[in-house]
Image 1 (cartoon, one colour):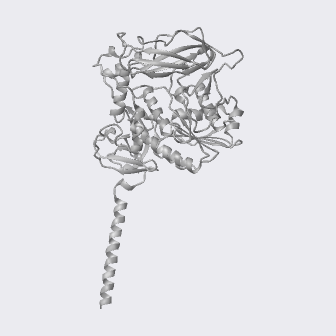
Image 2 (cartoon, rainbow, N blue to C red):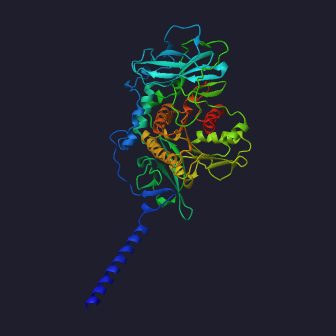
Image 3 (cartoon, helix red, strand yellow):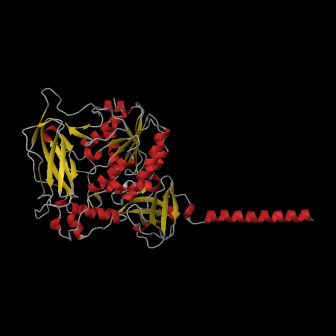
Amino acid sequence: MGLFMEQCKGYKILIVASIFLIWVLYCRMTWPDSTTLRPPSYRPACKSTPKFTESPSLLESLPKELAKWTHLLYWPPTPGNKGDLLASTSPQNSTYHLKGPAQASYALGGYLEVILVARDHRGRPKTHGGDLFRAQLLGPELKAGVPGDVQDLENGTYLLSFPLLWSGKARVQVRLIHSSEAIGVLRRIWREKRATVDFRGYFRGPTGTIETMICNVHPESTGARGPICQYRDMDSGELWFCAQPSTLPCNSLVGHSKGSYLNVTTLHDEALLAWKVTDKVLPQGVSPIQIRMAAPGNSSLALSQRPPCSPGLPATKPSGFYHGDVWHSLSCSSRSFSTVDSILGCLAGHVIHMMGDSTLRQWWEYLRDTVPSLKALNLYATYEAGPLMAVETTQNIVLHWRAHSWPLRSYPTPVASLHSVVRQLRGLAGGPHTVVVLGMGAHFTTFPPSVFVQRLAGIRAAVAALLAREPRTLVVIKLANTGYKSVYGSDWFTLQMNRLLRAVFADLRVAFVDAWEMTSSLAVPDNIHPGRLIVRNEVDLLLSFICPT
């Protein structure tokens, strides 16, 4: 009898346990989207309106290892002018002159120093710094140019320094990109606004029903008054938010595209950022100079012995200069690949993975258009997002490009095609035949710097892991180039992002292509998508790292 009772008790425990297990499985299968994997690599983590609190200051919510980079974003403060537009820096009234007495000629390899005095629209000298000036030494007849170093003395004056790197004529040119007052507007918006653009998410039901909702990097930038769909990138951990459709679940998100530019400025802000005071050349303040060679028969360029181009080299300032429309790196012995055969010989046996924005896609397009035997394959993908692929079968060359994932301003593209850079890097074995090129920045100027820092932190970890498992992999970082001049994308934003890019990857064995200086050294109009001359030189520098000798 006792044995029978013990068996009954055991059966009861087994039945109760089975019921409990079935209940748990039922809950997991029917619980709202919090555990449903969708779209590929993204997990909808929440579909009810969450509570969010304001951060006490910029980037305080980030881990300490990320916050350590924020000191790079220092910019001299701008005192308030109480709405007085005439007190802002004037490109017409600001002046510059030689620091020392003028000379009949200047020695090749020396420096030219210039003092710039910022003045307001009433002609009064400014008493504080913070303006964004761009200085160049140009040799138009020689198709030469080099960026000048601009040192802000934070008292209304600036010290400009130009290396004298070629013999012949040269002239100084200075542009006011933004006044300090305009930068005050940009800085305030960059740090206080969660976003200055939004995006569209396309949800599709099983019967073909489509609902279009607003999406963004922060839930409060979706315009949602009800539930919010939250997506977590399973590789990088980054979040993306969409207002939840009224009739469709969060896991029905199938498409993504750019949305609207948000109104984030006042009339006073817009006056400070107006085109008539933005990116304007200052009146000529220094007469053209003559640069002489040290002795007849010597080289006409000041190029010292430089090591072959390889990752991990220390940065130089400037990073290089143009002469004869050819970029000469000052950190390594860059080469010119002027023929199809030289390009093919360098790329032979390599698989190139380009990941980033459309300015990096220009490199892919340049190689596709320059090398006739490099054939693009139709992968039936959205061109703006990729993936794009070209192959050269006789030389065993494969060339990939793919856009970084959200936030990406593009025409409608499948969400399944949006692969994060971290995801792509984790899928690479690496090796001596693998080249990874990363280029991003342009699509992050519409968000606080914390968004870009978080993206870089994930990519840095993935690059470090790739180099650890296969150190022979070549990783090249393309810095962001000049081009934008508005509240949605300014050169001032780009300058800050390039500081972060260099700092984040400084201790890794990677190579840099300084697209910022390569697009700001010649007397050509800025364009977010540079012309062929500049793209050719950027690609030549990439090839110099692939084939240093």
